[in-house]
View (cartoon, rainbow, N blue to C red):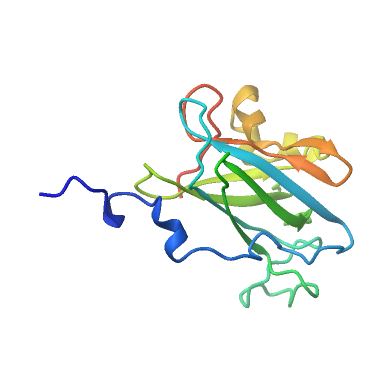
Length: 182
């Protein structure tokens, strides 16, 4: 029996075979009004960078609409695709260019849904990015309110500059990002 890793045993590092997308990190075109850059580092349980991971995002537009035919409010704005994908570099870094989503109207604070695929994971993990300038909405968000403050903090991005946020993802260990059962 072979001891080599096969695609059926883990979701990575086979990502480079078919999931690369050179413009996947562009949820909106560069120069779009309200564009924000969200960057971060994906790390494992030992705090080491995961250089062969994949971070995908799914979100509403600035009006809270999804770029999906099932959204009854109609099509989203021009150039907004609602979905992003970025492979991590050797240092575990990823970056998404997007816009801040609007409120969804169901008590949830504006957020971006995130899927992470990486070596050693038998299935994807799912989390969210919340915005630091939404303190009131974040305090009322059902998910954030259900978590201890130190755990909820792992879901809130940090402002690093004008139109720039940092959101690091830790797969396990101290400071592990909160992941959702979906």
